[in-house]
Image (cartoon, rainbow, N blue to C red; front, side, top):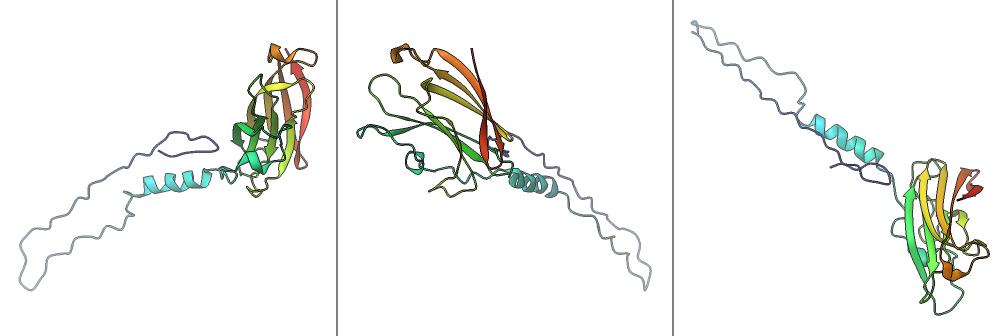
Length: 201
């Protein structure tokens, strides 16, 4: 099975096998003459070619994931407001945002709590940067967002990130939970992600 881009796609190749037919030369050998030698096969052996070519193509098409394995709880600037809280990595979505053929990462972070949910921060990072100090492409959703966002689903397309979120709402009690659904698209240009309008409903 061969894999392709930030998600593996099953596939395969069929190995064609051919039988080589030998030529048998028979006949009477005249005095002072020899039997003609069999003709050499000058064609290329195709038995390995069908499988070798897809392997090379699959390896070349496989996107790099240099930030995979990054300790996101320590590698970002996100910090919890209370000392006994710890940073929780909610979700990491990989995909090529910048168009350089290297997978970038969009990370959702929050803080531990024993009561109601805490707000999330959603931030994008450049896949070509160092895992210990990843370069931010922009904070998409801030933990200080007035809508108090608790849920965020991320979709990555070339040059674009879309967040489908759930928020408590600006004036609603926190115990109500994420009652407001919204979507917001962010477009990549000039080295950063720029927010579009937020659509609720």
